[in-house]
Picture (tube, rainbow, N blue to C red):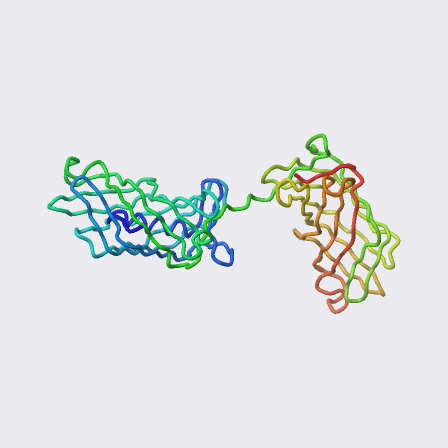
Length: 374
């Protein structure tokens, strides 16, 4: 934890910055103590713990102190995307030889497991002058070391350096060697709590009926169970019956929602008039993995209510309608629990219609009789 080479220092800083930022070859994000994702432009700083050591053919260089600093240049979180860090400063002092940074370079961090990750460096170039020898080293996709997150350390995150930096110039290879070995340990000082996490996959879903994936064009129908309630300021509207029907327009996938074109939508036996002006579309994404459950959202569904002489228009726009509980949990038909707030887009003034209208109710999927969101 105290060995870090002059060259290593530079690289380390970059690495740390990256780690703090976010990124991963699979899907990586970096979070703070509140589990909030650290965004583009986050400042990352780290200080050495003990001495840092850089070993080359000419001998060992030890530095008592080293500081790393930079800013994240992206958020991370995308599949196959690491978080990149632009290194803004590298310093090390109390060394037994002169180390000069020629180029700060960039860093990249990738999630590995738990709340840990690896840090790599590209374009960090430094020169070392030692016992009359002048050697230049430069990183190129070079793995610097391992970041251990705060969830494991119980405090500040750490960076353990164990890297080999290729030589690119200077005195002959016999004196500088093919590369320099850098070892040491850093502690992240800002943010004081830092974790490298795997980003959740983009929302997607497939629908299954117990025998396989439901294909494009599958009919989906649902009927209400009990009364559905619309609740504008002018008073509650209750409907005893409601029917929803449509067809899937795609099969979905791991990162692609299942979309449904609504073909039938109505409310009947109500204590007010509800008229559907536009049926719109629905979208389903899974909740977790292997639960069989999902979330239903709506876009472009427009309806008007006429109640006590007031005329109100509401329209969905990527509006969450509720939760689908799959047949694997219900042991029968899948269900839909509605708890939605639909924005008002026209009609009588907001004092009577409100800016939104709450909608609650419960539905049972009647076709297919077995339905899971996977």
